[in-house]
Length: 304
Image (cartoon, rainbow, N blue to C red):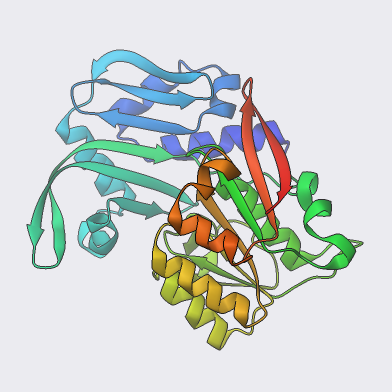
């Protein structure tokens, strides 16, 4: 399968999560747009839309209904909403094939937080794709003398942080002609990196990668450190002080770190106390900043 065919197939897989009456609208997209589409968006009272690199495009004029989104949830959960209740309370559903559906609408509260949804009014089907080889553009700068430097990937939302993280995990785990393979432990709290289904990753994260999914990142880092004897620990999106403290502790045990953060660049992150503390502690030796240049991603490597 060519890269083009793969990208279209991933899009077509996302379309199968839609109710039948909405699938017809997607057929108006040209093949080139199906290759590049990043999300399908459903909003009650608005037409179905596709998120493309150039922006969001409405598909047709027929408006999405509450019934449409409820039907979508049934399809995504295999008609067993109860079995996915834990994820739904967090605002998303993980689907077979590595797809992820975000949810919005009216929720009800219970002791301890959100209890569930009264109704679903918004949904976003995220079309995750593997990009094998994307790590090759930065790998040499991150592994001088076969030593992996702890690395933080920085980019705004939707710019490809998780895609690069996944391919770096795969490459470090698999090794190359000039780079020895490593034991990698992946703290995949939201299931977006490995996309586990029936106990197996839906995406290739390498032969020497051990995954802990669904566990809060701070707790997962410590569990993996104690149980899996990793050489590298990878995690998506450092967002809380407890995440930062866990990776500091991992660093003190001699483990290399690979993580992501939302931001425009190093200067942006150093203004925030959470990340400034990590840089001052020299947790990371390298940063990869992802930038969008006329619809194409560029990767800049810098020393932290």
